[in-house]
Image (tube, rainbow, N blue to C red; front, side, top):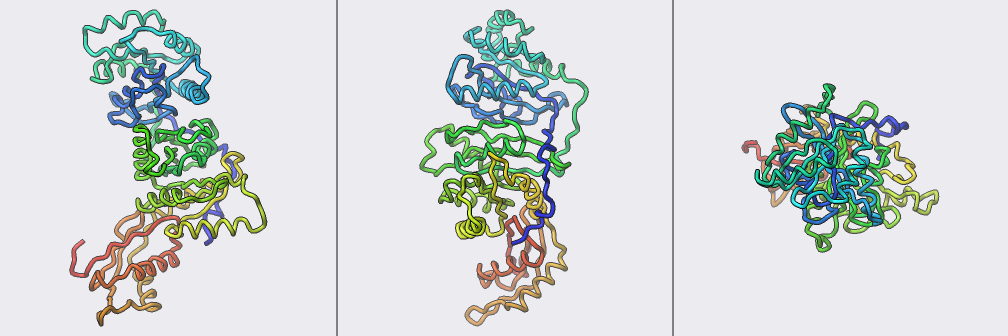
Length: 458
C-alpha cells in the first residue's frame, strides 16, 4: 500500500512550538490537595485524587477560565526535597519544569497541620523562580479555621488565601488573585483544525519517550518501570503551521493485571483519550515483538472508529537485514488483520530515527478520517462494484442495493439502502468497503456502513 504522506516529509522537528495561553502551575509537597484544587478549578474530575503521596506523577494540563480570562492549568507531582527514590526525583523534576513554564504559581500548603520543613524548602525553590506566587492554605473547611492561615505569612510569599478544596470555600478569591497577575496578552487559540492525537499501548513500550521526542522536551516522565504514566496528559503544540493536541496515556494492561484502584482510573482515562482522539498512535515494542494485548488495544481504537497508525518503536534494537522491513510488515499485517488500513511506521523514539515521517503521517491519517465523498461519485463506485460482483442470492431471493450516501465523517460513515437488510452478508460488506478504499484511496481510517431498507427512515 503506497501512502500519499511520503511526499510530504517534514524534516525539521525543531519547528515544534508548544501552544500557550497564560499558564498557572499548582505546586507543593505531596498530599496537600493539589489535584483536588486542580479538579475544583476545572470543574471535573480529571486529575487522579487519592490519599497517597506521589499519585500525580506527570504534569497534567487542562484549560479553564475565571471571569472570562482563559488559562491553562498544570497539576504537578508533589515536590519531595529529601528523597533519593528514582521516581520521586523525576516527579520533582516535572514540578520544576512546570514552575519554569508557568506565568503564575499557586503554592498549596496544608492548613490543618501548619508549616512543615518541606513547605519551607519548596518556598525557597519558588523564590528563585521570580514568578508571581499565590499562597493557598488548603483544608480550611470552616471560617473558624481561618486563624490557621496566619503562621503562613512567615513563608514570605505574601497573603495566604484560606481555601477548602473539598467544599470550594475561598477558591473564587484565590482565582481573583491569580488572574490579577495576568498580562493583557491572551493568545487567541482556536480549537478549529486541531488534530487530536492519542498515544496508546501497553505499559513500557515507549509512549512517553515518543511524546518527548516529538515535542523535543522532557514533557512526561520516562522510566523503564512499567506503569510510570498514570494520567492521560494533554499537550497542545504547533508544527509547520498545523495545530495538534498530543495525549500520552497510561499503558493499558490485561484486565486481570489491573490491581491498583488508581490504575483502574488510569485505564479509564486512556479509554476516554481514545474516544476524544482523531488519530491514535498504537505503539508496539519492537524489541519484544507483538503480543495479544497489543491487538486488544488496537481493537479499542478500531471499535471507536479512530484513524490509526501502528508505530513500531525501538526499531534501533531490531536485528537488521535487507528484508527485515518486509518481514515485519507481513507479521504486523497478519497479527492486525482487522486493521489492514492502518499505515505502519518503524522508528526509534530514543534515537529519533525515522521520527520525521510521523507528523506527515498523522496529518494524512487525519485527512482520511475526515474525507467526504460526493454522492454521485459514491454511486458510480457502487454501480461498478455491482457489475464486477453482483449481490448474492439466498434461498431464491437476491439482494438489491439501490444507492448509498455519506452521512458523517470521523470515521467516514455511509448509509446503504437495500431491499432486505438480512440479505447483506458481512463478506459482501467487506467487498464494498474494499472497493471504496480502492476507488477513493481511503487509508488510515475505518469505514462504517449503516444498512437501511429502502422503506426505512434514517
